[in-house]
Amino acid sequence: MLILMGITALLYLTGCSAEPQPIHYGTDVCAFCEMTIVDRQHASEMVTEKGKVYKYDSIECMLRDRKNHTDVPVALYLIDDFAHAGILTDARNATYLISENFPSPMGANLSGFASRDEAEKVMKSEGGRLFTWQEIGAQIK
Image (cartoon, rainbow, N blue to C red; front, side, top):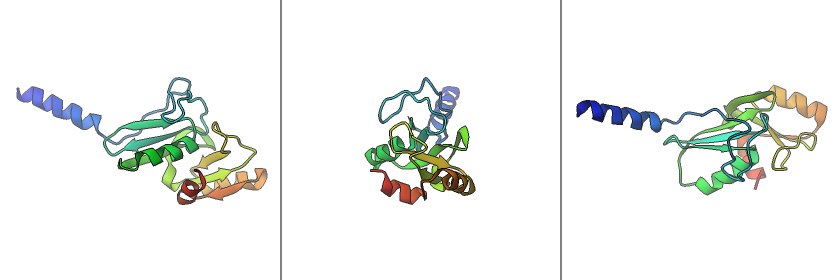
């Protein structure tokens, strides 16, 4: 009986950890718009404190969907780093670029970068405007 209780507790604890999950491009579906996630430069992920993972085909889908989850404590917001496709990075520390030269899946022309320097280089060569996490949340409705 004690063994069964220990296994149950272990399963509960591992099932509720707030950890990111890999995005399975071409298979996973966006939690907001229900499109298949295929773009390795624009996908994103939100992980609640209880460990529920929401995956998105674009950063703008995550930003819009978080308004539907204001009552749920979020542990992690992650985005694909535009400069390093398929690599998730902390969305709260990222720099965002809106540029018509880089269309995103849902049309906001929004890309995220782990490095502000990388974002500035791309902006200088391709145009656009940079934003912080707080600023992009207000920008995307």
